[in-house]
Image 1 (tube, rainbow, N blue to C red):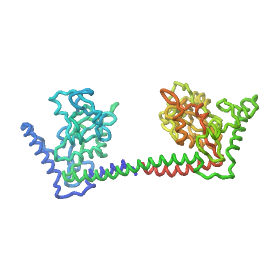
Image 2 (spheres, rainbow, N blue to C red; image 1 turned 45 degrees about the horizontal axis):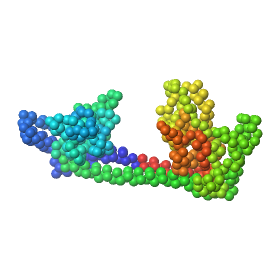
Image 3 (cartoon, rainbow, N blue to C red; image 1 turned 120 degrees about the vertical axis):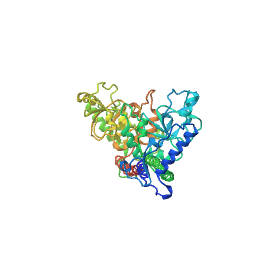
Image 4 (tube, helix red, strand yellow; image 1 turned 135 degrees about the vertical axis):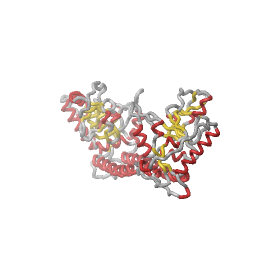
Length: 504
């Protein structure tokens, strides 16, 4: 369920008069507008502004409105409803001063973080112009949050507002929360986009805000609409909370599945499976043959150099005393370097020259996500010549595992064979002689992620480097069981993926 779209649908129904019923006892918006004008006349009288006669609020022809509204509603301009559209006070923020000054950056999720709001020095005579009151609505007029609004509910202490904000204020005949909900509707955002000035930073002004069309119901219906929206949004909040709880459970379930998998408890052992010890002997022979081809003078298979140039010993399996946890009898503990014939990182000094977009990309750890390659648009593009030179280092092949070894540590994916990629040092490329899916899931497990955290080194950026990976250990099942484990994990994860998709 897309709760964001659901919220917008509710707001859309609300401002079209389809969320609540219309009642004759509510009267009409036309009468409400007259009451607002009368109220303004009374206020001017109290503050001795008799010479300033408030203008009548003339509704917009209903045929000119963006959509049809109930008969007793009216289309009006926001600027006609607001008592004022006031820009904020321009002053530097200070740790101490005469009064607190709310900035755009102090507003998060429709709340002001009052404890971090700075002060400003402002003349006493100007405070009244900019001081916030309950039910004021602030509008961000520039930057990445342009158009976002905040309704002032609780003011723990006196405060004014800063220059990149605009304040609108309404009479008691307008429900401020109704206006706030309008400022979250699609109609509001459509009009805002049309009126925004396109510069390096988009910005909108008070004129744009004041000229917006708003469908206005009588006051009593405004109040019913607000109550109905709040009731519906409370239910959506509960759904979202449950969705987040479900996502947490899904994440925990994934890790539980991986934990069972690497402990030999996800699928049953089959006595007909060839034990891991025989698999390791075959891997030893395969590596020996490969290395003998590269170095014909080296003939001893018991002292064949591995990919990290350390002697591979037939009894390289970990002793029981060293084992991090118990595994089935048919499994073996080995070092990861023992079951890989390629474990190499990317270029430590990547070429500085970057061409325009090509088919040849150089990726870093930021481009690698669990299960897939991401953000390819932000990758570095190389010429074919540069790429061919770089690719000699990693010789990427289908089925290789890509592992983030610097910065964002421990993410991995299996290369599908699609795309021409070489890598910076922050990515390691692994070709394993066991089931690559099993190794990838082992990397993803909480156990191995903890190994990474405990052994990562570095100052500016943490790294889990090749030597650390080679010497870290892995529990190896028989090859047939590795495949069963990988298939079972994939099957269970596909169910969890579907559940997670429903949460979006």
